[in-house]
Image (cartoon, rainbow, N blue to C red; front, top):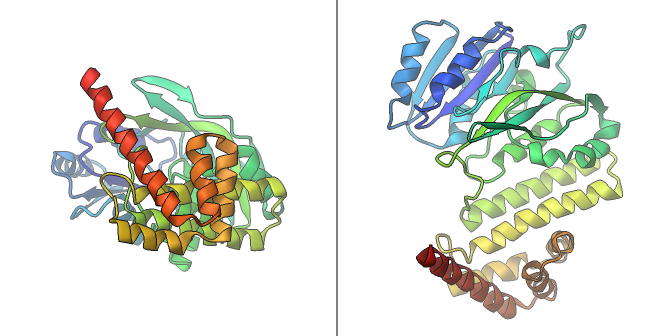
Amino acid sequence: MTTVSIIVPIYNSSQYVPKCIKSIINQTYTDFELILINDGSTDQSGEICDEIAKRDNRIRVIHTLNGGVSTARNKGIENATGEYLCFIDSDDWIEPDFLESFFYKGDTDYCDIFVIQDFLKEVNGQVNPNCNFPNNTFPKSLYSSLFTGTRLFRFGHPFAKLYNNNIIQEHKLRFDENIHFSEDLVFMLEYILHINTIRTTSTAKYHYVINNTTSLANSYNSFESEFQCFNKTKNLLSKIENTVTVNAETKQYFEYTLGHFLLRSVQSIYRRKTKKKYAERIEILSTIMTEDNAKFLSTYAHKNSQWIYIIPTYLFKKKKILSFDIFSNLTFRARYSLATIWNMLK
């Protein structure tokens, strides 16, 4: 059996994918298979993958209709035969000892260990360390300090991690194809529920390349997608709290994260591309204005301390549905008007 299955989802990445694949082929750790998922690319990405695969029998190319990155990753998981899984994005690249650095000398059993590396951000050719991950091993009893000490949720992305494929297949873990924001974090939290040890390392061999054509950091989605992300994250964090000891600081960190996700959900019904009609907005607000949700928003607003968050949070907490709707609607109208004026003045 192959040790590692490397899954690379690809969509219109012809400019970057040759460097990505070359960096994988040149790994010092050679016992791997490379699964390239061409997700309906309309550029030359598919042809590039096919041509490179002819020269290396470790490479498999799977061509699919465009279904999005989660669908592509799931297709890779379904076809993976390795003991472990590793995800790489097609516009990123890895250093020669990236795979090797996951495996510590003397360790032979990784069936119950989740290994997370640090990574390097590369913007316009400038490489910057992301943060300093500790070289440490965290059993379940120390998960709480891991969540708060490293702000682990910022590392929800699937790359720079070593997953155990048996756990993923046994529990049928897949990326949620109906979520388009933090679906990576949801996948990671689901995985964490089934392991007993998390190992972090300050080793940074993964280059996360940020470019204007592929970055989704500022994208927003429909209320249904955003709210599903919020609900799944809330349920998973609740399960984690029931599984491991969570201190007050970690609990607040969970609430802050949920407040952020809930705020994105609420704002989606006012954003230009995903705006709901008045009656739909009122129905949604009347459903989600609960005491628990108000607590999440309050934690987020308290941390940010800006009136743009404090006022709607107060209205949400008091269940002032009509006032909340008026305030939010006017706020977003003002945002779009100011953005239009700014663009005209450029």
